[in-house]
View 1 (spheres, helix red, strand yellow):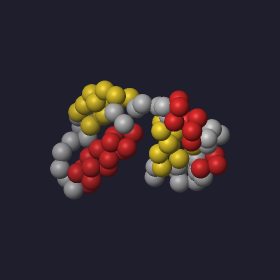
View 2: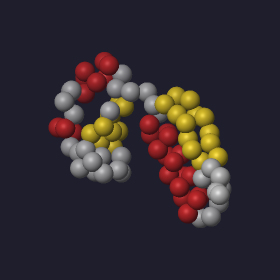
View 3: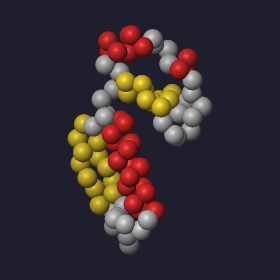
View 4: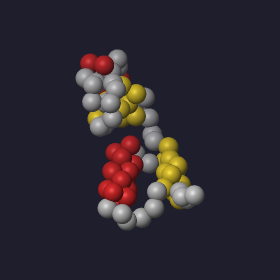
Length: 82
């Protein structure tokens, strides 16, 4: 049975966590390191998948900023996720 390590990251920004996941994924593909489960929480964020447009977000940028909600593009499928 293959084991999986884990790492508790606490609260971390979406962009920072996504970059970490991409680095870990590349390392695994290169045969370096072990699989890891990342335990984390993001501050409020709306992600726009490959099929999303900015118009899919129903609140304007000013309101989102007041609410402390970031908007980030991501490479997953789908549209908008909070």
